[in-house]
Length: 75
Ligand code: FES
Image 1 (cartoon, rainbow, N blue to C red):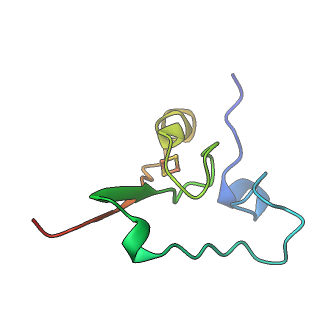
Image 2: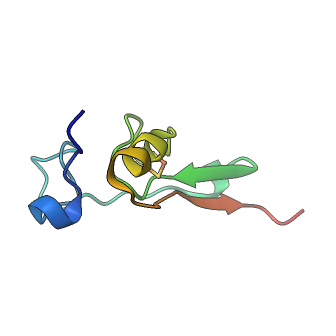
């Protein structure tokens, strides 16, 4: 399959998420995060703003090495 264009190929990281908005911003209350939460940084997830593992396919196709940011509570 043809490699998907990343940010460097198109100039845009976001190909599909809430494109009608001027800027994609997500506010998440810390109290609503249980033990941990993984947030997407590759813009390929189908469950924005959470990571759904799509970065793995993106990395495979493009040679990129992106992954989520994981917030977790101190134990
Ligand atoms: Fe985007 Fe995991 S799906 S970082």
